[in-house]
Image (tube, rainbow, N blue to C red; front, side, top):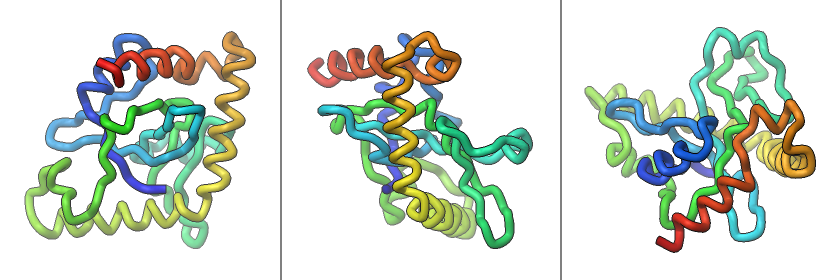
Length: 173
């Protein structure tokens, strides 16, 4: 899986319909997505990556949540809230390449840029190790949420069917 940047206009569009869709714009920085996490028909799903927070240390991996943690030293780099995965049309997503990272984020100096790229490389290595696990979780989560839309699990997830409908409408406009 690779790093992607979703179009912020598309994300704002989705937030009109589902409040669980996460924001992607943080000042001079854009939140990255990991993908493709799941393919459902013509829809490609991507999951936002989030910085690790103190509450995440106490949480366990589950069907809709996964920690990116270094097994050798226990360091928690980031988390993937799989419940917040979203379908994104191909024309609203760009793969992040390290040589064009400044298109998506402003750095105060070269060291900050280098440190950030190193962090992304480390996180990507952790993601690559568990890629199959993440994709299996996403598929199971999707099926459970579609089959039982009123379950407590589905209620903490994005409304996948609604977002697919809105994705289709957006991609043809």
